[in-house]
Image 1 (cartoon, rainbow, N blue to C red):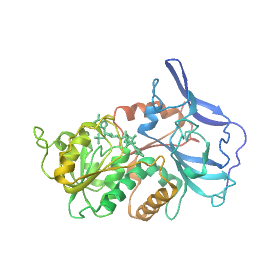
Image 2: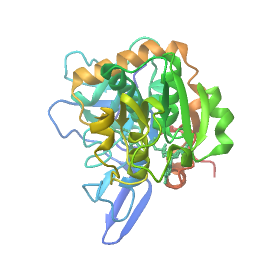
Image 3: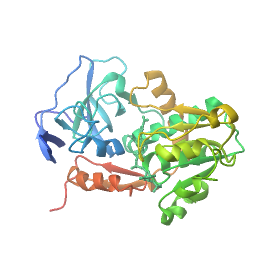
Image 4: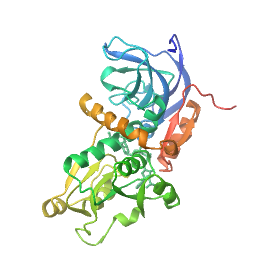
Length: 339
Ligand SMILES: NC(=O)c1ccc[n+]([C@@H]2O[C@H](COP(=O)([O-])OP(=O)(O)OC[C@H]3O[C@@H](n4cnc5c(N)ncnc54)[C@H](OP(=O)(O)O)[C@@H]3O)[C@@H](O)[C@H]2O)c1
């Protein structure tokens, strides 16, 4: 049954003034901004690395001083004038300015422009869609980009930051598509968990730096999914096999890319940029269709780090900043924190 929205709703708000930042749960009155805005009742949202960047006092990602956080959400449409997006349709919502420059998914309801909604097909429910979340969409887009490039199905595929949202989904999705996955992690205590997600081998972060004194390392990887950036991405590039590619999707260790031209001009490797924030509707649809096909073959539940109420978001943001998440932190906006 569709719950009818009226009046104030609970939300996790970020209010910046001068150098200070107020984070907390308050009541807000959602309102449409664009003509094609659709109202979604949020069943689940997720805590992403980008949410932690938005909730920094001197954030360069946040573009307004006052907003509801949350760059993704999933739920059911309750109000819409857009053909094809009828009330009652289960959807995932992510991308654009959501949770960055306009109110996002950390709320009981969110208004979002139609182009940022993806109707959920097949086995996808709002819960499974939010276990996947922006991180899983990015991981799936990375896998498809490697396949479009022509990845050797018998070679090993490296995934960096493997216990995080993007990393753990990339390990899971690659394994479900039959690849041999090598998980690189700074959390060696999670090696068994990564093997259960489908990794055939687990290596320490430092091991990605093969033959550190040389311009090029050994030819190791038939492909890679990297969400770390910085030196890590440079080391991935110098250890790709001839003709292989890396999907670059994140900047956890920094926005700088430390590399030389040698991997490109002597090993013919490719650096594939992945963006799912402004990706066009056809790309989103392709990614969600691929996810819907894989979901029946995957156990998503172990990828849930925790399910928290809105009140738990500040602590979750700290966990993300420490790089200590395992899979995805889900937010249930209707849950109440225990007193
Ligand atoms: N391009 C896009 O459209 C898109 C979409 C979604 C996300 N992203 C980006 O992808 C990145 C990952 O997002 P996420 O949600 O997966 O974050 P996350 O859940 O916080 O995971 C990040 C993982 O990186 C590893 N890590 C943490 N600090 C590190 C460091 N200093 N050096 C090396 N590794 C470190 C940790 O895994 P281990 O302990 O296993 O190493 C951590 O779990 C972010 O930069 C995010 O903005 C981009």
